[in-house]
Structures are given as C-alpha cells and as structure tokens.
Length: 446
Image (cartoon, rainbow, N blue to C red):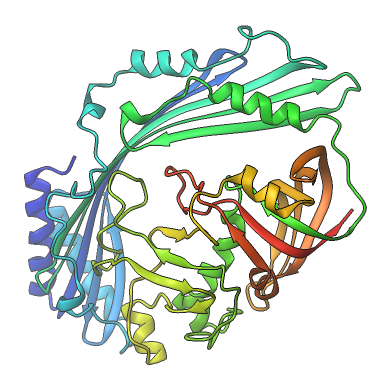
C-alpha cells in the first residue's frame, strides 16, 4: 500500500520538476503485489511472489514532452533523476499537442481509492499456507472418477491474488487514487478419448473480494468443457446462424472498441474512421461504458490522465456515439477530448432482458454455437476477420454434435449489422460485459 511518505514524495516530485524548469508535469506512483500458486496433476508445481513499485513522471518543458520511469524513490536520487529527465526532454523534438487535460475534466472524487469497493482488507491476512490450501483444495486429479469414455491425463491449476494501489497527481492540482484487490483461480484439464484424441477445457473464477471467490466447481466445469468436445469434427461449410457463448463473445467486440480508439483513428488504421453519429450496425447493438459498477473489477473513476470517467453510450442502437480521444490525440485531430479508452464495456441485452444462452438457442432454432476461438486474425484497417472456432451444431434449439476445425470469416461491419439477439448473461467477473450473442447468415468454412 502507498504510504503517507510515498504520497508526499509524489507531490514533492512535481515541485522538483517545476523547479528544474518544467512548465507542467504529471506523476503516477504505482505499487502492486502478486502471489501465484500453480498446480500440475494435483501437486504444487510453482510458487511465485512479485512486488513492484514505480514512479512515472510526464514532463512538459518549453513545448517538448518526455515520459520517464524509476523505481528508486529516495528523495535526493529522485531529484537527480528529475533534473536529468528535464534536460533530456529539452533534446526531444517539439510537440505542441502535448498538454495536461483541463482541470474541469479531471476526477475530484477518487480520494481514498476505494470509492468503488474494489479493495478487500482481508488481503493482508493471507499467507503462503492459505494460498497453498486453496490451490490444492480445488484440484480434481486423483480425486474424481474417470469420465465416461475418456480418461483425465492432465490438470493445470493456478490460484492467484494481487493488490494494486496507484496515485495520479499533476501540476494543475489533480490528486486521485485507485485501489483494488483480485482473487482468481483458473483450471485447465486435458482428457484422452478412447480413440487417442485429446481434448482440453478450462474454467475460471475471479472476484475483487476473497469471500466472492467460489472455486469449488472450477475443475468440474473445465472437465465438462473438455468432455463436451469428444468426437468433434467439422460440418459442411456455408452460412449459418451463429450463437457465441458469453465466455468468448468479447473476442468480437474488442476490435470495434479498438477501432474507436484515438490512436487508431489518428493513424488511419481504423475501419471505423469518420463513423461518429452514423448508423453502421444492427439496432440490436448497444454498448455503454459502464465504468462505475461498484464491487466489479475493471471499474474506474479516472483514466491514465486523471480524466474522470462517466457512464455513457459508445454505440446506441447501432449508431456510433463516442470516440476515445485523450488530450494529445485531441490536439492532433482537432476533436473534442473524451476519456482515453472504454473503461468497462457493457453490451446491453436485446430484444429484452432476461435472455440466457438456452433461450437464445431456442429462439435461433438451428445453427452453430461457438464456445471457443482458436487463433486467427483481424485487419484493423478494413475490419476483415478470420478465426478458428470450436463449439456445437444445434438443431431445434438443442446442441446435437460438437464442432471443431472450422473457420468463421467475414467483416465486422457486416457481422455486427447481422446481430439479432443479445443475452443478459454476462458474468460480472469479465473485463468486458458481453453476453451470449446471436448473428444471422455468418460464413463458416470446414
């Protein structure tokens, strides 16, 4: 945790920079701790403990800009570091678009760092023995009966917990803090079928609070996913209704959010250039930046510049409502600044709330349910994509046979124009809240 001494040193570093000739500066102090316990086939395989502390200072000096980092936070060493950093910044090419954000846009409410309830004080009570017991208590290897028609040949598990504390301040008087803890368990199992083919499945659970981490069934969920794929094979290529499970649906939303980012737009590397205010997608697509969900990892009150986040539409009924433009890109492109990126994307349900995967499959009738993506690529300039997939063929709303070895191809503009349903089943532990999705007439190649 950041101490009062470290907080004071952060403020003093701003004064040091101004004394050395900088007109403005921003400082970020970050401290983190991460512990991991890996298991392999029911035994402890690896244990790690990582500590990190660093200070990053962004300097605005006579029309020049530079950013520098150090983990040496003794006062006199920091003064020498800043003096040299200011001198080095003067050697860089002028950049008139570099400036601090307007104070009126900055966050003034993140004072304690735990306003969103993301920090668990019980973190400090955990020790090596407790972490080991949780990791070993979740394994299946050697404890569960062999699955019917296959045998469990490998199990990898990873328990991890972490603590993050960050402080952002600038010469315009900004001071904001963010604290969070995270507790996570991941299980991946591999089974061998009677024909010698191997199949893998995984499941994970995560929570910012230790009491919210339920890992009892993680291994069983991973085993079930592996067994579901036994006997999988390609089906005939063609156009199918595609249902995408919530566990992997963010794979399809991320390219849209990236294409709305300022750097991609400024570099002409976005298939959504000049899209603001235009109806480009299905009315079924509404995405908001749901950045203030209390108690859910990923929520933030400010971005890396200290600009206050806000709950706002990104895409509303298919219409692009927002680019993500930081202060620098705003100057480069002549656009009004927003926040730096989408803090917590939330794709809203359609046509009504309460839909889950089972109901979407029932309404869709027949098609392919995608439960995993295997490699592939997306062209950020054109929106063309090709991804390997696995999942199930479904008929009359019921999964009939596992599918693998297929490609789904297309263009994101067309794909998201064919969205017909979005569920209400996103897991709160996901970085992006993307539910089960249903698209019409999607191209699959066997």
